Image (cartoon, rainbow, N blue to C red; front, side):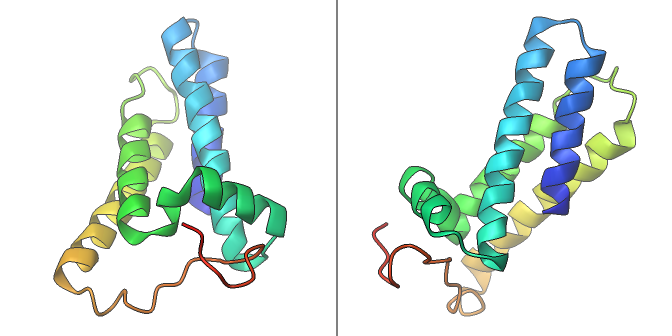
Length: 133
């Protein structure tokens, strides 16, 4: 959840500091993707049936280890790909590097130690314990 907040801050800084339209669009995508990840991670702490149902139906790839790892790697490159004129470079590299590291570790564990992730169960609020995805 903290990384999602850091990514949202980077998106806001990107909008405030850039005059280029392409950088503003990348920053808006960063904010949207961080909100999506924040809502997904929130479901692990407190399940809100309607949000969990909508997330699971529209973004079901997040509810599996490979899909979540791929998503984290994708947004890591989105964060790292910001132009160098962002004044908070340490935040960019720290956030992107953390996302990339977590994504790579999840994929590594999935392919080399699948027994460690065998008990991974995604939040099922709003489905009565049944997994429609």
